[in-house]
Length: 304
Image (cartoon, rainbow, N blue to C red; front, side, top):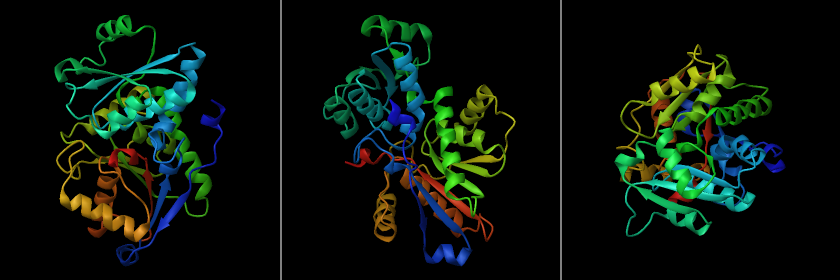
């Protein structure tokens, strides 16, 4: 468990391109995809940060089983499975939807790492926060440390605050004016907003359609005692049809981005983030001279 807290900071990489030079923007990438237990593994990036204190707490409570929730393409499911294998926890994944004939690569990876997959209907899955429904699961599978969908809880926000601490240390000569990241449940964004304390603006790019992300993040901040912070926003226009939805345009962008910058992106979250970010830069959203840091949250195992 010591490794969870004592690790070298993930590197910061600066990007260069004609559009950045034209608009006068300095763009940095916090390579949290390189903060990982294994190469192209599920336990990396924001999942490392959201789960580190939860895993320590699970061990402190004497729990040897983790029970959590997610969909077929959930980076969180992959992360819990890998963490369980590495740190010696049994893992149960409650999966939204009926069991598919051919499981996604993410589910195959989770099963290969020892996770028991419990499929449930989409209507039943909506009860994932209901104490009675969870109690029934615990009666079936035994005493477990319960992690919410996406791993987002107060301890997760505590872990995500360290992103800002590392970035301030690494960028002491030119602190970012904007922190940008992809959003699924909003936990990473909420932790970053709380750590920034209004000293820079945070922007979340929602990977899900529906327009609910702003309210979800606001609720997290309120529960965390940071509801007064207002230097943040959600960009809802770059979800490409919804969670795990893609288009040929997005895949073309991923390929071009890898060729130009040498950074792989995942199709569920970070490709949508960088597509949207460069679109905003082209539109002149950021004032010339701005320093922007994009947080690469990992999730590359979902590309296979």
